[in-house]
Length: 158
Image 1: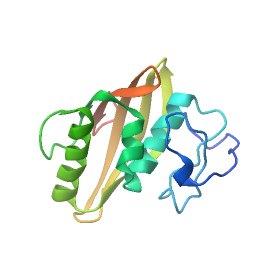
Image 2: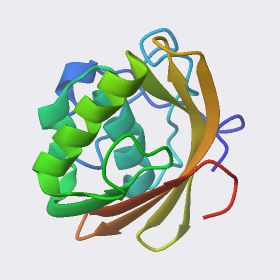
Image 3: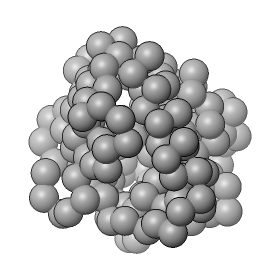
Image 4: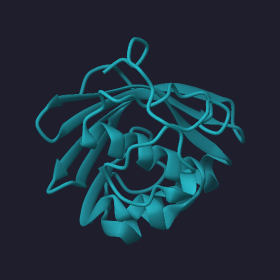
């Protein structure tokens, strides 16, 4: 969903966000310029916003709490394996990305639950260590409130 027209929810501290589906808004500077989450976000959309906030703040434990232990992540830009599996795989993916790109983050522009338990997130991969600002789309799949698969592409189709 595009968030321009919706009403923001009350602000909470980012440290309070440790579970999927948490309702929150983080001020623009803390969030790296992402639009605020809104009341109309579904629990899965909220979990995607929260996951990327935790990733940006390097709160890996919080990020992993939102993911199934057998999560699969297919990165758009390979810096290692074509797929990362499980929580250890996600930790390795973050290490691989940081080693290849330096400090990086994902700046989300739009998060939409397109069908039950499937969220499409569009944004940009931004890296400070290398000149990089790549449009990226993530297909995030859920089961029982946890992220089970993420497939990233560098174009608008998933």
